Image (cartoon, rainbow, N blue to C red; front, side, top):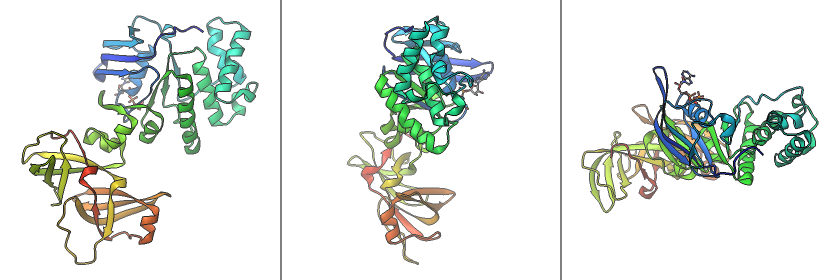
Length: 372
Ligand code: ATP
């Protein structure tokens, strides 16, 4: 095997990448621990692929350093970095057997036939395709071809595998299966995976660590669970989804709780976690969609005078199987989304146009950094 045994810790240190006038990555620093499954998540054009390409050595940073296993790799050619890339278009050779496709990179490195084939067979076993070694790629399903591409990328024994939108060419069913497969193989091999995606649930499903990016910088880098349950700011909350953003003006603070008034006149309570927001400051919080209880309001009744209760009109209802997604129109083009457990919803189903009150508990509110 060609690559060093060193650690697969990847550090991007103060990196900027310019393409003419475009600044694709701005003074970005990030450390991905050895053996982590990391997802770079963000909208199109935020710089995810550029970071991957700089780690691989396809691009050089305009400024800053890239270190793998604690050593700068900027002076190293791609082949000596200990990285391998798995591409979105899996570009297998259609007229070569699966075994030869997987063994290809070792051939390029001068390994003999028996070594190449033995190593390729080991990797095909890891992705559970040993029975297909003699087939041609067009004789495989899309998911099987993708597993061949994974085995092919792993053949040089990289310490870091870079995956650029690896699942985007697959249909929904295969995508869900393959993401579990990627995570299983990564855990089994224990090497660092850096996976670029713009799909929130894909990142949350596979990664140990999720890096949410916008415009060439990092908005939040944290565990997949924290990104979902404790997003740092309104951008991450909205981009990752699954939560509502709450906003209000601080009326007073006592016992670790701020009491606020929202634009719609609702009274909100946020836990303030040791911070000291000023009266009159605008604060933001997030509340998970599945932590909201909804009750129909009888016609003509007044909005309840209680904390953490918002009144609106049911705008859309979507049955998602195990839960029902209810969108509530709050007026002023603002929406609030609740996920109701299916049993609860169907006990007394709501209708579009129903006037409802949505309630939640203050302890479930996650305080956001915006406004602090
Ligand atoms: P996508 O999800 O669409 O692939 P991305 O987040 O991976 O997007 P990048 O491909 O890293 O984004 O691009 C970041 C920015 O840099 C974009 O504005 C893009 O147009 C620009 N860019 C990328 N490569 C080049 C290049 N070779 N020449 C000029 N501009 C480039």
